[in-house]
Image (spheres, rainbow, N blue to C red):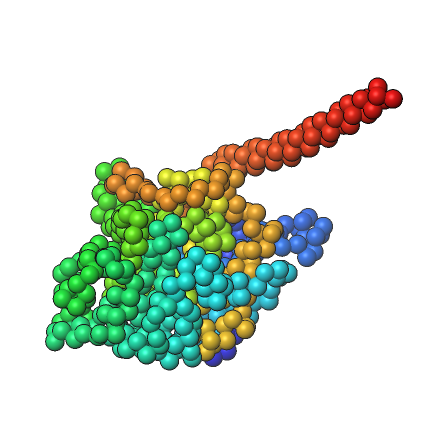
Length: 580
C-alpha cells in the first residue's frame, strides 16, 4: 500500500480550530503520509514581511490519533460544513470546523486509514530523517554483554547464554540472556518447553548488598495432569544455598492460578518445589487495564461532574487501585530481596504469559532497590532491558489508547507500560530528590510509546526488530534523549544521589491521581510550570555555587599547604643563617 493512496484530500482551506493545543483560530489543513498539519491563517502584513514564515503550525502524527469522528455542524443544513474530532492517544482532543462537509468526511477517512496501519514498515520511524547529530547510538548503548560484564564484578554465579540464538527457543526473549552459571543450555531448552511461550527463568536483577536475585519467567505448563519438569526444578533449586529458601511471587490471585491449570497452565506444585515459598500478590490483568483507563479518562473529561460524582468515578474506575496493587507487589519482591536477613534469597516472579504484570513487578522492584535505575541513563537501561528486550508487545498493547480499540489489535491492547510510568511517578512524588529525572521525562516516554518518530518501541520483541530491520533503518529514542541539548531538559535539579532502597507508602491516602498527565489538557498549567521552572533554576544555581565553594575550599587547602611549606623553608633558612 502506498500511503499517498489513502489521502483523499491533501489540503483543505477554510478550516477553524475550535479546540486543541492552540487558541481557537482560522487556518488550513494539510495531510501527508504520516502527519496532519494545521497552518494558522497569516494576515497580509505578516505574509509580506515573511513570505516563508510558518506561524505556530500544529504537526500531529497520524499514529498519535486514537479515534476519528466526523459529523455535520447542522444536520438540518449540511451546507454549513462539518466538525472533525480527533481524540489522541495522549488524551488530547482536537476539533476542527471545516466549511465543506465532503472535505471533512474525506479528511476523516484518510486519517482513519493512516492511523491504523497494519504494516510496521509503513510507520513514520522508517521515513524519519535524523535532524540532530547522534553522539551516542542508542541501539548499542544497552546490551546483554555489557550488563553481564558489570555483573561479573559483583558475582561469579551467573553466565551469559546464547541458547536463544536466532530466537529458536523463545521468540519473545533476546538472543543473549543471563542464567545461573551451573545450568547448561539443554536444561534451559527443557525448561522452555515447560514454560508458556518458552519463557524460561532468566536474571532480572542482582542485589549486591544481600547477594539476592530476582528472576522472571512465565507460568509452568502443569495442566490438569500435573506435568512436571525436573530440569526446571533443577534450575530453580540451583539458586538456593544449602539451607536457604526462595520465594515464588505469582502476580495472579490463587483462583486465577488454579483456573489456569484447567487450560494447561497453573503454578509450581509444592511437592516438586518444596524449598520455595509461594506467594500470590494479584496485579490487575492487562485485559482489565484498558477499561480502567477508559473510565478514568472519561471522568477527567467530564467537566460538568459534581464533586461527589467526580470522586465516585475516580474511585470506581479501578485505575488507582491497579496502581496500588502493582506497587504493593513490587514492594513485597523488594522486601524479600533486601530485608530477609543476610542469606541469599532468590525471588522468582511470574504471572501467566510473563510479558505484562511480570515485567511491571520486576522493573518496579528494581527501581526501588537500585539507585542507578533512578538516574536518566539507568532508567533508560531498565526500560530497554525489562520492557523492550524482555518482550513486552508494545506494537499490540499501544495500538490504541483510552478512546478506541482496534479491529485487529483490540483484544491485545492494554496500557501496561503507562501503569508502570504512573507507579514510577507515585514513587517520585514521595521521594522527589531521589530521581535524576522529572515527571516531564515520564510523560515524554508515555507519548513516544504510543506514537514516535523513533524506532525503540516499534515491534513486539527483539525478533520482530530483527525481522523488520528496525535497528538498521530507524533512530533509537535514546540517541535523541542522550543528546546533551535534550538531556538537560529532563534533569531534576532537586536530585541528590540516594543509595538506599526506597520504601513508598502504598496506603490509599498516598496514591494520587497523576494530574499533570490525566488533566494535562483540561487545565492551564502555565503558572504551575513557571513556578516549577523557577524552583529548578534556583536549585541549579545553588548547586553551581556549592560546586564553586568546593573548588575554593580545595584551593584554600592547597594554599594553606603551600604557606606552611613556605614558612618551614623560611625557618630553615633563618636557622642556617644564624649558624653562620
